[in-house]
Amino acid sequence: MSIPFVAIVGAGPSGLLLALMLGKRGIPVRLLEAAESLDDRPRATHYSSPAVYELRRAGVLEDMKAEGAFIPSGACWRKLNGEFIAGIAAGRIEDPTSDPLTCLPLNKLNLVLQRQISKLPHVEILYSHKVTGIGQDESKAWVEVEAPGGPQKLEAQYIVGCDGANSQIRRSLFGDWEFPGSTWAQQIVATNTYYPFEKHGFDWDSNFIIDPEHWYMAARISDDGLWRVTYGEVPGLSFDELKARQPAKFKACLPGHPEPSDYKMVNFSPYKVHQRLAKKMRVGRFLLAADAAHLCNPFGGLGLTSGIVDVGGLSDCLEGIYTGRADDGILDIYDTVRREKYNEIIDPVSTGNIRLLFEQDPDTASVENAFLKTCKQAETDPEVVAAQRKAGNALQYDFREHYHK
Ligand SMILES: Cc1cc2nc3c(=O)[nH]c(=O)nc-3n(C[C@H](O)[C@H](O)[C@H](O)COP(=O)(O)OP(=O)(O)OC[C@H]3O[C@@H](n4cnc5c(N)ncnc54)[C@H](O)[C@@H]3O)c2cc1C
Image (cartoon, rainbow, N blue to C red; front, side):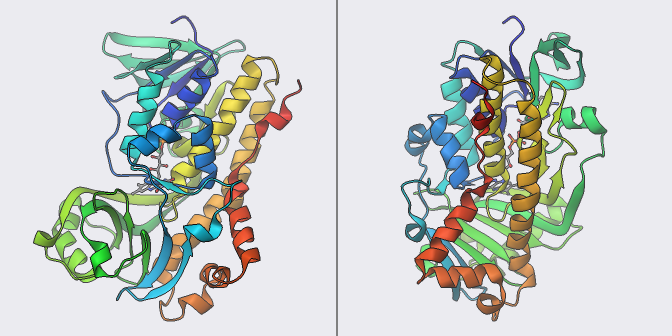
């Protein structure tokens, strides 16, 4: 490939989706990935309405369904003993103008994206290509890359950092430690576990358990009995210490108080969780999207959802420039809008979601917590349902409004 219009750094879900959305519109793209293959760790599973809208625009929903994607019955909040506090049933927020929240483990979404990209002649994925440095002038940008054949300098008109939380593009633009925000003291552990929650009274697909010590989430993520169980742990423990404590945690937390022989855990990954937003999402010919640009805790499924919304918007901005229907200033609008949406929606909502789990008294949650009070009202009031839906879609923004042709 000669100099592509766009180079994307990172073949995680955001980089793959951006490559696909641009590639399907005939825009030449080169995707650079440091690893030899796609990441298989247990991370995102649930995509909220604004993300599903972009996945539909990308033309991948049917393939996702074929891989097992489904619409969960809803999410509820419970006490540690399983007692129901409040919930949002998917049916209550059904609306032909709004895509329903959809569940598919990230590794399967990545495969769908990779498979569709492989059919596009002008999208190239280069694995084992690790970006180590960057540069730009008035007519192009470039990255320095460690590749199997030796160091390379690869150029493009625009370069997008989709290279995750430790983004080299972001660090090269602003400095290694410049990622404003904070890190939660709480440790979390994400597992994928086969266990018959439904036989123990968990009759909702997603369950958030409010408890000062044993707070956790249990969500069905497949049709064959696989659940994502993500639980809070005390800070400061090593991987081995967390692993050693896991059977006792499950026995204390999970309904039915199971022994290890009662379940099959297929993934176990501790994570630190952050609330951070890059200083800018555009610097000249470099752009940032998804985790490279912003992070939030995973309770509530807003992390990749917000990344997918970045990517959908950025694909429109870059297409506008490529086809001459927008000028380069549209990228400044991308920077302003996406950072505002993080500050106004992602940060406060995701912070509220995690605090609810370990700070709220479960006995008074449904009357004291504003969000759960609204869920209770939504059980009987369609206007509250409509307001919830509108709030859920507020992440969206159509950058094509800024095309001049
Ligand atoms: C436990 C857990 C559960 C979650 N659940 C949800 C959920 O239900 N819903 C949701 O919306 N979000 C969820 N998230 C968040 C979501 O997983 C992330 O937001 C998402 O994976 C970020 O995707 P990304 O493409 O930005 O980055 P990544 O997936 O991190 O991909 C970055 C890619 O860039 C590559 N890379 C890095 N550095 C370089 C370099 N120098 N050169 C070349 N390549 C490089 C990496 O190898 C990697 O492939 C969850 C997160 C966690 C931890």
